[in-house]
Amino acid sequence: MQPDSVRHALEYYERYYMRYEILWLLKTLGYEKIDILGAKPGAFSREDKLTTEDFEMLAIAEKQMNARPRYSSMEKSPISIIVPTPTEEGN
Image 1 (cartoon, rainbow, N blue to C red):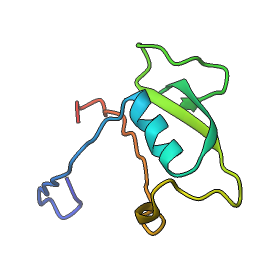
Image 2: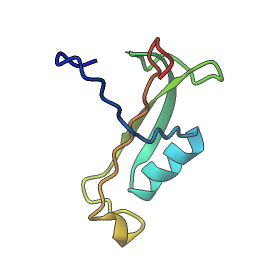
Image 3: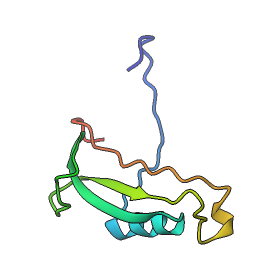
């Protein structure tokens, strides 16, 4: 609830990604040496292997400076990947 005591509702779309989708997106954009690791909510480490118990993923990838995306239509379309965590209220 906002300070003005008026209840506000937000509509949003939440999208979850599978490991293979993240790999495909990064490869399509020209990234190489891609590592997908597991992460505890808010605690990212290169030491954690991805398991079925992980709710978040950490993607680490390298891209050569002269690498071009596989599809030219992607050149002008930046992609942001946001993997949200649920709040205690169940959102």
